[in-house]
Length: 442
Image (cartoon, rainbow, N blue to C red; front, side, top):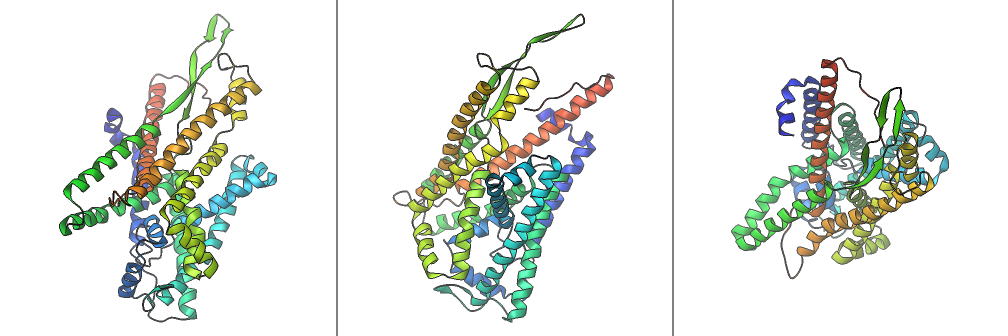
């Protein structure tokens, strides 16, 4: 990889992609500091000081501090992720949508268009709720003076339109990075938001050491645990289960072709960082409605979930495991994998082609998905328990944050390496006047 990285300046196409990705991230971070018109910054700071340790902290983390500053990007990417979850569930529930998705690029474009329509609707709802909350100066007992200089209907209309436009612009930035840059755009935006909060986390940790609320030994334990957690994440994210594949020999003229052995690689965590993102979004969305709208019955349920660490993390872990299996079933179809092997003349040693191969792949995929889901759930919920008695270790770097940042970084580097390998391979073939062999994707 080091030799490939050294060759970056000689690949203009990759340089353009990297510069484009960096430029989009800069635009996103710059927009975080643009406030909604008619906001009083001092009252905003007081309002969010009253809501520390609530659902606002989670929303603020995913928006990269945009919510805390009442920015035009305050909604962040969460409306788009929520719409994607709803659309994925609808695709599985309605055969017509599932058939549309299998139509190829045209079907996927239509599904994406429906997802964008859903994003607009969610942005409008959440934007209105946030505008009402800013006018009230908070929710429930945690209220201060109004954070709006001129409350009224015009402010609500302006705020809703501004927040909706900001949310759609963030969605557009993510799509542009995916299409014209390197990496998954939405995941990179979330990772950039989390990375932006790291300096503040170090500052808070140093402040606690200065005030004597935490000892140097406690800080050392935190960093040891973080190092262990990071190593665990890297180990699982880079682990594969290799299913052996054998290709029979074929005689073409005087040449004997084939007969080689290969393997079908399946990641130990096939769904990557998607399960915690989806689970967080699903927990945040109803909690956001409760927080902004102040329904008594729903508030009681929200308090039960979000003020009880055990209940919250139990539900969170269950949602992570569910989305791990759900997302894996979307991206991997054992029947398609078996069919592709059969078409290309490959077979798994000791397993009959067809239904038996499909069942074998499905069985292996189910086992590794379960292992990956348990690992993701453990990484996401373990730091939350260490923050409580008897440990009392203030983890400003949560398990979800670490998993997203490391997972997105590994995926980003892997895509760069794949681009470099492909570029070097194509250059090698062109230099020797050779034709590129047909590639098969399983």
